[in-house]
Image (cartoon, rainbow over all chains, first blue to last red; front, side):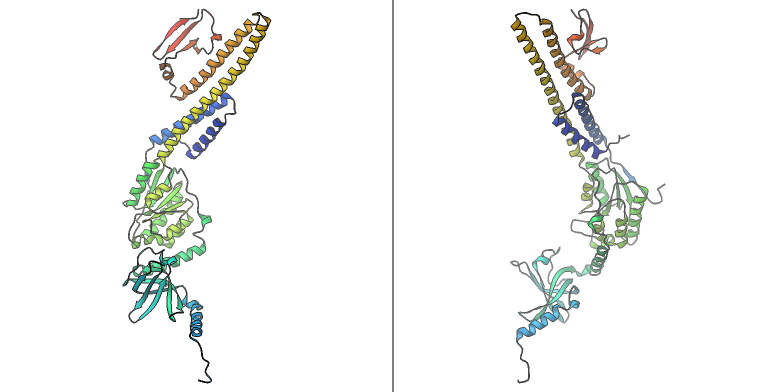
Length: 65
Length: 397
């Protein structure tokens, strides 16, 4: 049920978006869609972190199919 | 004394010294004995003692550079094994041992075995820095090879739960002590490689006596760790305990808790990061929109004032219509960019326009679409005005 998110890529992407918006040299529509993407990414990541539950799976030689 | 070559003391001493010190058999020795007359010199940092047996003794000196690396404090009466060279001390003309390391005798055999295995594996390249792989920053699955009942597992679980609950723990329980332990650990490392897609593997146990930890000096484990395709973090005992496994592993952690920290990002910090980035992005887009708005307004204002001055110069109001449409354009620009920002914020704020409306704004809809400009309205049009707590119909006059 937990959504998949590559945190490494998310952090990279957010740094990129942040720098792009900082520079600001792009059309309004592009800026808005980057902004929206960035904020959604933050929300998604925070939500996943918030809801994460530690999972422990026990393995054994015989027990593994 | 004619016919005899007469020598000086220093000639003899020099000869003996070179004979002793050039003899390879007297270098890199391991010597067992009991420490006597232990005298550290607190000023120089050098340490002096004798190494005794029942009816023989040798003077020993351990220079500061070596003595400072000792993990324990030697004392008279202690049974030890020294690693040393034999040298000759010219001033007294006596042989002495220059000591590089002291191990308490209890460890004797293990210590030698350890040193020999370390040497052998090091020569084979098992410890080579080029072979060490980086530990992933955000592991999805973390293999753990340790005892099911040990403190190590408990510590690892606790740290990961706090820092990175997204990392699933794949526990392969083994015995971490005793004869059956090494083959079990080898099987576990291989099984995790074969059966799972773990991103990293923690191998270890909590503290114990050096005998307890000695299984991690097993050559079979060292080779299994080396062969593991998954990066291995070794976490055996405490800060001061080093095992062969530590040298082969891709990363050595001083304790199991530290191993868990080394293979997980700090989730609390990450949450903070996403929160602050989100706020920063909002500030930036607002600044962006402000800039956009003021540039457009400046453009129109310039046009408008030039029209106005032309009109004034002509002394007529011929340009009144043009002026009116410009003014309308400006209003549209202002409300457009305001609307765009509000729409963006609203959409992102859980798609809840009520928040903005609560501040006292309302917006108008004509035929189910938001009215963005006064230019879209004609007298007689029916519009719906939406407030935070409801809506009302209205007619444009």
